[in-house]
Image 1 (cartoon, rainbow over the protein chains, first blue to last red):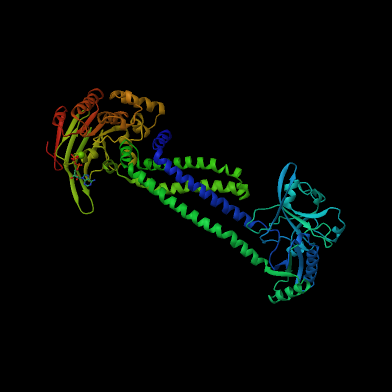
Image 2 (image 1 turned 60 degrees about the horizontal axis):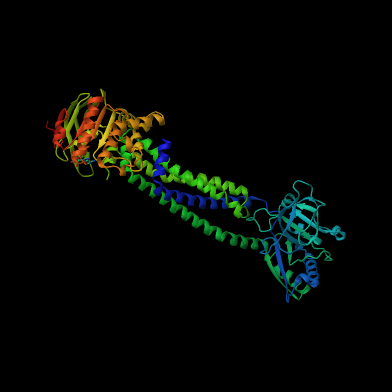
Length: 398
Length: 221
Ligand SMILES: Nc1ncnc2c1ncn2[C@@H]1O[C@H](COP(=O)(O)OP(=O)(O)OP(=O)(O)O)[C@@H](O)[C@H]1O
Ligand SMILES: [Mg+2]
């Protein structure tokens, strides 16, 4: 019977190619949506590595900025401002950070490790950063005044970086060198748990914190003051704080944002296209479902006489039912086979930069299951109709 | 072989009730070749469908191969059709997407047997109707007479005891009709197949053992 079905499907290749194409496209769409959704869900549940509640981010800009990087005055002013911020009783902790969490700028870098390139995200921070953002130190320690005498620039990495660079080895005391600027060699003093700078929607990244010393020994730039305030601190304190900072650095301008607000904005920016795409995908899939049901239904109608003939020669109603479903599933399998081959090429095109391999696999398996469920659903009604046909009526059908 | 006792068939649609057959009594012996005649709409196809278990009578009794057909389920009906009955239709009813040999094999798909055995039986049946050279053609590549011969091969491939033919020559010119009739007579003589054939052609009817005449749903001879 399987051979018979194969022959039937093959000899009807023109009609069937259309159905296969529809199923194939649905598979791709469902795969994309599922892989994205699974990736989103896993990321959402993953720990962030820090706490954004009661954190304010104050962005500082020089009024007549030329090249802040080269401007020693900027560093001095920032350290001064930081000191001022720390003096308030409402402030639990404050630190400097160049590219803070939920901010739109990111310092991407990379290094060669044993012949393969590792992507790294870098932030320049001051000693109190771990208290301000409430990082979890896993091994070693975060930056302290102890580092003032360091020979190499001190660095703290997160667990992902530690694993990517050194595997399971203990990384405290090891060095990271940059390909282009070997003189900027870092020496790791501690490991914190995975820190996802871009927030809940981000895949795990490799994070490296570099110390910005009070005396600016190894350089580094901080453009933001991160302030952790006591829970319940009133909005009125914002103004008090900003006024004091402004007085401390008159040639700078400050902009204060609550980090949970920054988080909300970042989420919105991320979700808008995702929601739009999902709606389009949903629409597409419902169109395909309807279309497929229509095509399969028409297929049954067109073959009414064939069905009558099969009944006359000894097929039971349920046999006809199974045959029609079998044909549909066969077409689904062909589409899925093509789809899997195509989808397995996607990692070459960089799919793993969009979703993790685990989400990719789950998405693929889920999409295959969904396609079979969908085609089964689409085929159920037409094949039920087919099985209900009375043989005599079916044979007379014009 | 075929016994009908007071058989009646009423078609009920939303508004109309058609009494297609009434009070039909028939007794056809094994190996008999019976032709059925009558004007269009008198119920010939209806009667043939009842005998072929493609439709159920509204009243009366039907006995086939010494078995009373009563309370049979879909599975029982299908098995009986598969093992004991063969059908030939005026419009051939070949599956256009299947090659000749695959068309002939269809009844064998619904019973046990190997692929090789099916293939062999199909070739033998095609041989029987003189079409061994057209095995891998598609139905549309054949003439009407050839298509009907394929349909006969399909009807006999499962070696049925009863062959039911509804105007098998209706779509064919008289030369091709003769060929088909020769094949049917050959099956009747050599295999002892019981045949019931609906026809509008007196010449073909006269060559059979008996003529049953219907008029307006009633048996008149
Ligand atoms: N499915 C059906 N529903 C309602 N009425 C039907 C149905 N099938 C047949 N009839 C009616 O039953 C009667 C007998 O029809 P049948 O097809 O048996 O005639 P026939 O003798 O085979 O005619 P022909 O020589 O034209 O093939 C006709 O009046 C027809 O309209
Ligand atoms: Mg008729």
